Structure formats: C-alpha cells, structure tokens
Image (tube, rainbow, N blue to C red; front, side, top):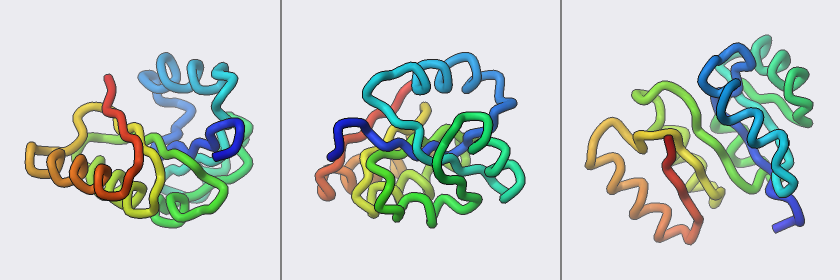
Length: 128
C-alpha cells in the first residue's frame, strides 16, 4: 500500500449534516488518508462532492469505484438498508472497508460480510 491510504467514500454528500460534522473533517485532516474518490447516486452530485472535497475521482456507481486500482480502502456511509451491497462489493474487490453502523440490516448480513472479509484478508471496521 502507498504511504497514504487512498480512500473512496460512498455517500459523499457535502450537505449531509452527520458526515459533515463527523467523517469529513476527520478524514480531510488525517495525515495518512488521501481523500481520493467520492461516490454519490448521480453524476451531478458526484461532481459536486469531488469539487467540495478536492477528490481526484468522482463516481455515481459504487461498483465502478470499488474496483478502481486508485483506491485502497472504502468508507460506506449511506442509509442502513443500502450498506450490504457496497460493503460486499468492496470486500470482494479486496479493499479495506469502514462501514457506518450497523454493518447490515440483520445478523445474517453482518456475519456473511465479516466471514467474507476474513477470507479475503482485508481489514474492516464498523463504527458509529
């Protein structure tokens, strides 16, 4: 891995009050993290997020972002019902993943994702 962790952020809405007060300030100030890519649900908001955060890349489909060779790790900070698919895709792509709490909609999803991460040898974290 390079000197800095090249992070892709799924749910990078610059107008989100929760992320704007918690995630974004910490990530942007962290000396070991390069805010490399943003991903939102449409091209216009992705472009706006890229500009707001100074990211190099913008995506409107998480599946494209998680396979990018320019990304080392992924943060999944979207509504709970949508956590599973992008978290699974990132793990399958061999990316380290931070998923906002809870990991999945139920215990079965959480166990599946944790098992997959262990099998893929990637680091994961679930936070609040």
